Image (cartoon, rainbow, N blue to C red; front, side, top):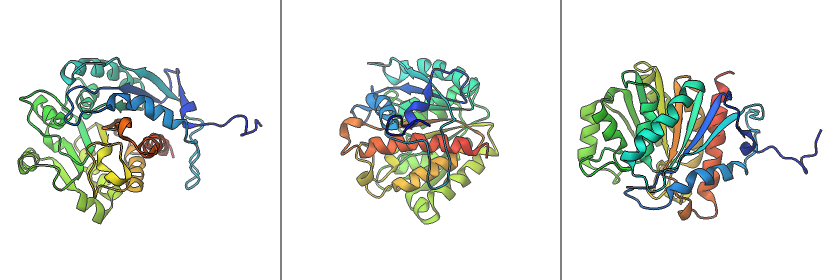
Length: 300
């Protein structure tokens, strides 16, 4: 057996060029037209680097990821591309991945990448569901163009039934009454931060998944990292004080991805340029491991 002093298996070592791997990963470094300007476009590279700091073994549960292969499809060229023009590029790149692989991970990028990710799951939106972990509704109007603040609104306008959308982690004083009204009128399932805190984020997420699974064949999950408390996630420009804890976010990630109807996930709104002491980078790297652990649980 090779000495671990000479060879250490990291989560990054699971990334490969094996197109037959059960999991795929794609970077969508979209930064244009963000309401919170920054460098979310460098997040995919930072997440991969953080994965190199993570092992493949969970000492708490005994889950070992070492036998899991992840096809790394690289990063899309989205430099200076706005969300409207990036839509087709992201959707076309994701569509074959979600068809060939049991799970596809999309590394954003600003939150506008969520819209094409949902469309990539099916030629129509009839049986597609969306779960968001986000401090914000992302229901801003689209009359001023597509941004990281309106992917859910854009999906409603595309024809996605609000009854097949669930949003959890909505923060006080980070949204508007009009947006809340839109969500209610559309039939979106909403759970606030207080509900997540009082009932537990895992329980809230599982309830939301049950509702979606009853109506949907496939589900996309948007993990907007600004749902985490800002003190624990300085690299998320939209994060607020009082957000969910990192441990709750990570536990929920594993539980969510274990659901067989979850076919794709994204990580959005992570800006490495704002990070402090690699806190957010390591959170993102651990998130990737929890995604893979959740996928492994499907076969348990």
